[in-house]
Length: 276
Image (cartoon, rainbow, N blue to C red; front, top):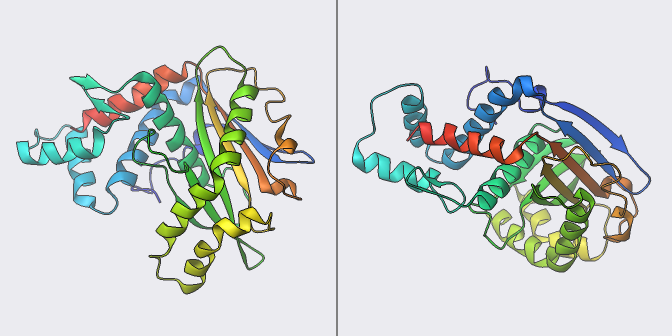
């Protein structure tokens, strides 16, 4: 799912350490300073591609301008701003709030790392999300895998942690959010999946809420936190208290550590704006 096979994967620019505990699996991901700028560009390209993949001429126009091409005609620029100037990004004259930008970038970090299988579970079938705006009320993401021939899903919640509180508190809050909203989130994803052409996959989407409600082997959830903090020890220590699942791969965690995360998120936005 890369617009250019020559681009490095985001996970190759980071250190990825996959770990396993009795109640869950999780990955600790860190961005070295030496790769910070390339990672910001790689993520911006992913955002641009993900937003325009149904209309690739917009991505091509964005990239041409990014690489020094002529300014866009007014009509095209207005359309590109609609793609890249959402409530979570904003435009140079009117930037979005930093808290929204941080959450937006955190969601797309989760999305790209999931597409790249930073947490290897099986053969990736489909990844839905993230939402257009971090203020949307649906689930942040859904990943569907095939393991030993069977379809499985993981419902994800993504957070940005830039304050002084503990990362563990953010994880616990996200777990409670899924506890309260999982069926509603999955109903929305189920509706999205009814349009896929594959009959088996369409049927699977139709079962998502009941699989979660019954604690089925096919169901599971994940929490992703992008943070500036290096104090992430035992941040999933309460994971076992949430979601009535029997296997540790049904609770997944992802912690992405980036020094000055808000500054990194702003740099991703600057790359996006450069193509406008």
